[in-house]
Image (cartoon, rainbow, N blue to C red; front, side, top):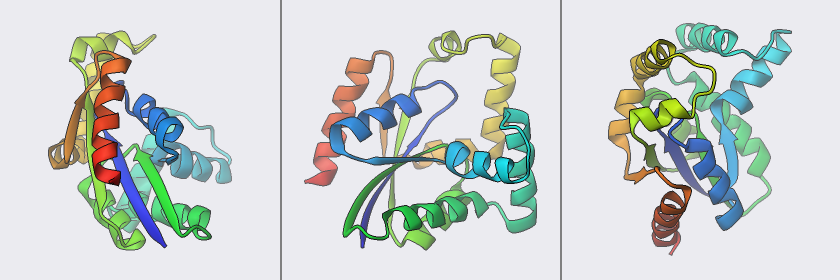
Length: 181
């Protein structure tokens, strides 16, 4: 089986899921998300609500018990189950938080992850956070960076600015067309 794996990374509210949805619609990618596809299902199995706080606690417990790459391993195993019957698969992943997750993901799937950072100005991202104070927004960003997101952002093979969807979609189309040909 041949897997083309694309990771979308970025700070909170930069447009990662918007980018992933575009790739699904335009290029036929299958979208996987660390939070939705790993954390939420594990929380449900434990009978807990899928809140950001519960997700953060569970993620920290798992990383402490099994190592920093555990989320990459769990998501990769889930992906293999979903695409095992296909000769070729194009997948896009969101929610990557650390270098260790990427390494484990690549090890299990036996493929290189092409990483795209979606970025937008801080004030623009804050506008997209409904119901969150500036203080909480900054605290969340600091927490994400503390988990290793800073390292992941530096690893990006491509950077795409997201101030308008049209501009972001055009840049993504250029990158993906180049990568798939």
